[in-house]
Image (cartoon, rainbow, N blue to C red; front, side):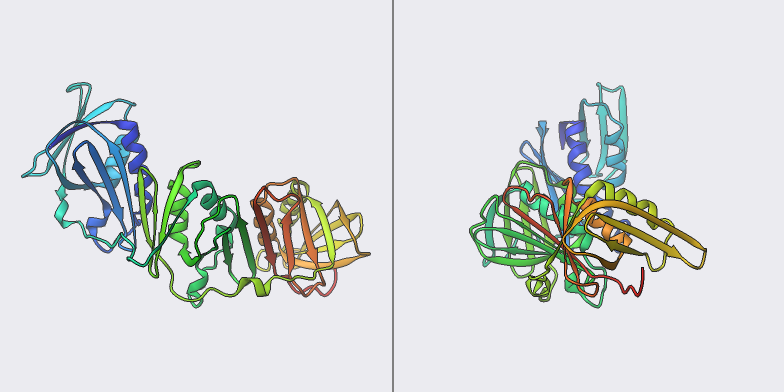
Length: 377
């Protein structure tokens, strides 16, 4: 078997596919890529059994067909340091000796592959009853970007260890929660035209975020167990989480009468400074909100540290004192990108509802955060 391929094109695809490989695998063969040559297309596959990612790259001067495995880390590191040049792979079909060369014989790299038949054959395709639709990749990427930070990690609630995809004919809703915070991102830029829902685990969501190109059309198929995401060059299959996701609409307050508007960057900067002086275990920051000013306070009695800072705001109530986790508030304000953030409040014991000052066209982003107990400012 022999073929020629552009080094940077191959590196781009192997780098993407390697995102699926675990740092520690129960089966050593899973530390490898499965490379398969068919005609003028080279297919690169990686899997951790639950998730499988396949990329395709065109090749030139192909001779023969077949499949073989090669150490993923070694091949990726080699390609990373290669110039953008055509490289030649020669594989001995019997001994599986692999030689990679470029510039004639000026650069040669020899290693041994593994028979392609030894690579496990994970399930990739969805069942016949799968629901399929097409959406722009930006719609999926925006949903993951806005919700991934809120995914839970409590193994006693496995259904919360992923992003809930709630797909309706007219919009695509992404939801994540860890019981302390909840994020709902609804996107109606493109209508999926189907009704289906699933829970995508954290790792597949991260892989999709890292490998999916922007501004391309994506084919999505979802059944009871798996989701299949395909573009022209990539195919990603992931196992879904079992269980029923909580009814997220029931926990979102509908009647928070007090409205707070604040400059996002200014408040986030103040919060970062003040939180340094707070109790790192509790991570509590207290907020005293008045019509024109919000005062942020953090105290750590164990180390006798204290910080107070005030920033301007717009609030339609005389005064309120409420406490939140500084880390969670910083995550929310860092995820949003608008100049201002709106916060709907009711009382110090009920959750605050955060939303961007201006919603993007066809989008609706809402973040809910439970308060922490505060007895005095």
